[in-house]
Length: 296
Image (cartoon, rainbow, N blue to C red):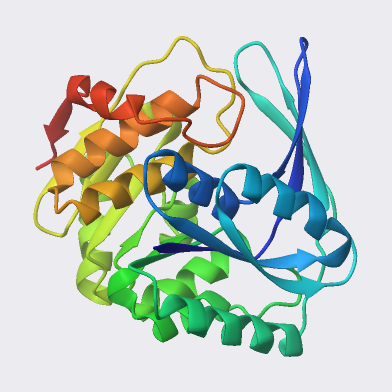
């Protein structure tokens, strides 16, 4: 079983010229559904505003994902995402439902019990208002860094990386914020990634760069890849799809070249439809056509 953590759930309302789609969401939710759709057992632990539990429970049941809930007050925030004909998103985010130290402690109790039976743990997304900045670090320390994947930003990433997770998957903006720098080329990025691996003991860094593709390094070798797509419908969930696909490769003992190929193919597969998750294993066939290059 793979356990995903979604500390900050939301309701996403996708508005296009031809239709509107409303879905329960959050990065941990998207990862869990993606994992299930590619043949892996996944469960999701969430802070859950009590007035929104029913809709999330029904949604996860529909996708055969078991949900676990630490209830909070109120309703889940609503994110309205207006998508133009080119797949560009203008987002209007609702207010966060806050948590407190007591709720954090109750969440950690649930997490500790679930993490014992998990092969991997995926901790992703932003922290809710009121949460400790080192909340994800605490979770990684409890589960054991060697089985945790961290996909976060800001202080949650800065604190979390010190717990030595197996892999981090920042996007380029999150990476720049983490290091306090901007980079001119892939060589500079890889050099900084290797520095972080040496400093913190992370095994893999998978860096997504939007339209520029992605790169991966284990501190020794580094590769980049790009896959063109003329049919961009919605980019939300592309990073979550990368996490799910890369974890499947890691479970199979594949090398970083295959991890990168599958991650890029999964993201490319996802952006071709509106829903924020991988729908099936078609990306695995597509991964065979992904061209990668070694970065030296």
